[in-house]
Amino acid sequence: MINKKGSAYICSFVGILVLIVISLIVGKYSMSLEEVVDSKNYIFSEGSNMPNAAFVILSIRLPRVLMALLIGSSLAVSGASMQALFKNPLASPKILGVFSGSAFGIALGLVVFHQTIYAYFMAFIFGVIAVFMTYKIGKQEKRSSVLLLILAGITVDAFFTALLALVQFNANVETELPSIVYWLMGSLSGVSMNDVKWVVVPIILCLGIIYTLRWKLNILSLSNEEAISLGFNIKGYKVIVIIIVTILSAISVSICGMIGWVGLITPHIGRIFVGTDHEKLIPTCVVLGAVYLLVMDVGCRCLFKSEVPLSILTAFLGAPFFAYLLKCKGGMWQ
Image (cartoon, rainbow, N blue to C red; front, side):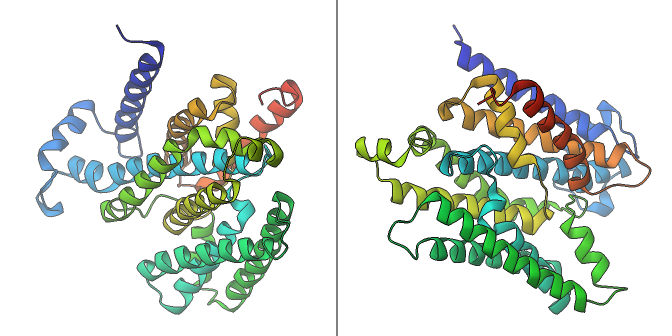
């Protein structure tokens, strides 16, 4: 007999599987279900030996689908973790400065090296550096608090935003600046299967760590006095969560650019369904984040004549939904 929890997992898996198939079928170059099924026979074939349909599915659409699932889950779980850590429903990974740091790394890599592989690497490095600066600035005082981390994050975010603007100002207007601007708006259009292979292991490991710590996020969301009275090591787990969120966020920005609203909206949607218990919220965010970003990516390449950046559509739909929550729910989704 399958219990309620098992049924939810099965339904989620089947739903995502159906959505993946739909994502592989729809697009400017329409496919049939039979072509999608037949493409499995060419998984280990070279591109020149594939039919056109199999090439489009396996080399273009499948990497985008898989990356959307991974990045969407990463951003959603990161957002839920930050909201628990900072005890603030408006918190997101951006609050640590990782987005602006990674964005500066991307721009610098494109201008200096002119190759995406170096841009990936520099985006990740500068995202980590930004969070390290935030943590060190926020720990200058012995009485380190959430407020100090938030203020430090705002400071570091402003610093790297200024550096990003400086790089853009000095970039070549015809060759470098358009690439920087388009990348920063977020897109999965250039993703390949090699990119998926590089990020799948660290993302799954980080998500697994957060999943094992999900009940501890309930304690982190309490006041410091309550957590200490329970004998909880606040500092240790706070550092672990920040490190994991930094890795997930830096990977996301380095591969797909700055995609907003996913980390902010999906945890609130999850709370509507399962409440505030992170035992249930974290796995729910994994599913919702994956579904949300996959649907947005399909919309970006299907709704308009030319593909639009992801951040435009996520903000266009996310902002009104969040306004609805504020206006009609009055914050009661918490």
